Image (cartoon, rainbow, N blue to C red; front, side, top):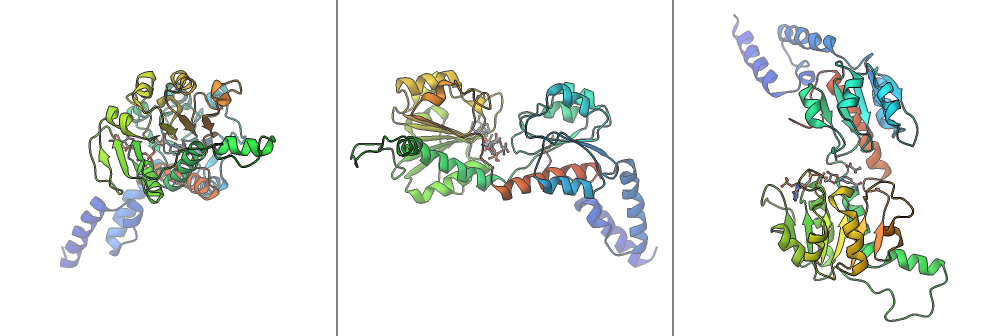
Length: 370
Ligand code: NDP
Ligand code: DGY
């Protein structure tokens, strides 16, 4: 074998070990290219986005749809703003290779069974994936894609908005202006709690939790506390790792930004509220079921805690007769954490790229690993 071929061989080996397939094919030696193209075209032939059927569960930002169409996918769309009823979903996914879903679609065994064994990828337009039976997907070798990172800033921004709206009685203030309650300037009217010199406790110092801390720091917060399931970590903003009871006891503001897991489900219950300061304000931007809502209502009614700001509830949408909507010390947003136009377009694009990559047997940009 010629020396240059040996070098190329080594290069090829290193490239296969370290680079995504589609990048490698562009490299130099012709004989290597031939081998690689054969190698990867084989896997592409076995499964390729072109001609693959993809079920899209809602009307979604067009960037993702355009990408899927450009990749030659055959789309079956529930192109409406309301969620696809389960029986329609079960009918719609039969024989598809990919599912583009939303956080409100439960992708369980029934959906996977209905789709059939050719299903290769489930990609959700969200960073939260508690609605997907990930374990079952992995058991069936179905890849799962999600959208971490690109929505972090938008969601943190909304968390700060919600915290300020709650702590400074913004909802009551707007209502007062609109319904004629606004009289002369009164020193004791609509006073709230400021962030200056406060202790902020963050339950889940992940991507969003960290960004919230960064955004809140300039408001004069004196210390950040946080809890996690895996122990202390390096944090962007100086923060102290504490156990859950300590965070509850010492925080003026408690922000829930952890993922929903069996451990975090209803971790905010009557017992947790009773350990919080009476002046504490709770903000939840994560998932509704991390809070036991009945217990929260009682805590807000009895003054166990001062106020709550919720971007997520149980159920969603919250029924109009929910006691939460009658409480002056509760501000409810309709799950709009990531809702900037740019963020939603990027989420749609990433959701589609995850699907296309999986169907092309290439590394997905954001895959939930086993
Ligand atoms: P990350 O995975 O980066 O962060 C999640 C954090 O939760 C991790 O730091 C993890 O810490 C922590 N966590 C898990 N279990 C526990 C526990 N028992 N106690 C304390 N902390 C725990 O995810 P993101 O920050 O990107 O997103 C977080 C969540 O926010 C999503 O799962 C989603 O539910 C929600 N979300 C809501 C949005 C909205 O529109 N309202 C928008 C986007 C996201 P550790 O590693 O130590 O386990
Ligand atoms: C998520 O991504 O998990 C949110 O709830 C919606 O953006």
